[in-house]
Image (cartoon, rainbow, N blue to C red; front, side, top):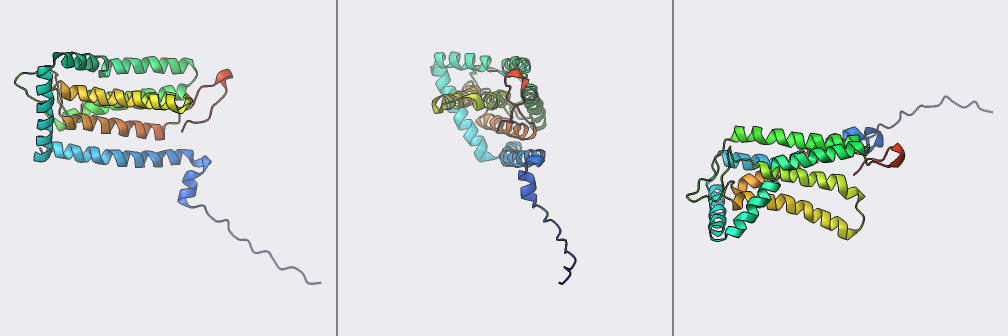
Length: 249
């Protein structure tokens, strides 16, 4: 009877970078990867737009001037439209949206969803700091109209109203969409969030206090902030009896 030879130890195969990222034990790495990809995909067009604004690219200037001129002419002929846009832009201005976000943070903390509350606070704070900083760096003047229907102070790019409305829309979707059941209700929530961002941005151009590219820049920046913070910070749904919940998608 022959004696078996010594066993040959085969080293365990090391998992690939992709499999390590998708492993549940490496969730933080996955979030950071998603955050980097999301930031790249959204910040690239924002950076390109900022470069075009800084360089006063003639086609962009002509487009901004044409849209502003057309909407300003319409506003002069329709006072009711101006009143509606003024009420909308005041109700959904940055400060009221931040106050609403603070109420939401308090509500989430009371529900036991502290990580979700932290995410809301960080998202609104990050956008609120980036907007004014970029305004100072770009230093773009607002439209100077002969017969303005509204006035606003400060620099133009990016639009603070559009930025904060986009942040608020993202917060609404991330916080409430996972708990909404039914295709109709989910579609209504999406429609409401998109309407908030779109109509707030439109109000700034319709009132002649921002260029169209200012609003687009605000929307892009807000989308980038929401995408990055959603990927980096874990968010959890509150459940009864203090049970820990699974992370939201």
